Length: 170
Figure (cartoon, rainbow, N blue to C red):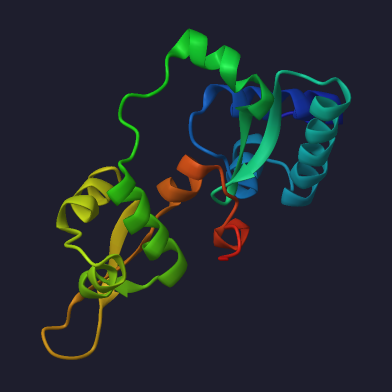
């Protein structure tokens, strides 16, 4: 591959981010462009700064261990008029269950049920079906119950870089 100029490499990174619907890692971009990861990181900072300086309708965000272009939150009301809100939003029960798993992981179904005070089978199946949670192991003890934790899809769904970005519990 020919030697690229920084502006050309920056444009290639933008093109890669534009065409993918999954967050791209620095490593993946570096392999595709055949460029050192350090250079990719520097150019990503420049792209992020460009989006802010020019007040574009989108911004570069670190999500689920990678980078992705996302629309600015302040434009959500306009985008919703075009794309209609998703009909498959999570129920209150699924959100409660997901919050417990996110903050207590790894956690068993019986621990979730105890916190919620009701059976969580349906909510857990919904969350598993949407790949927001996954089985992360088995707890030692009688019956060796399944332990649940969140997935990379959970981070993408909520636009989080990692679990450290979860709001603090009150």
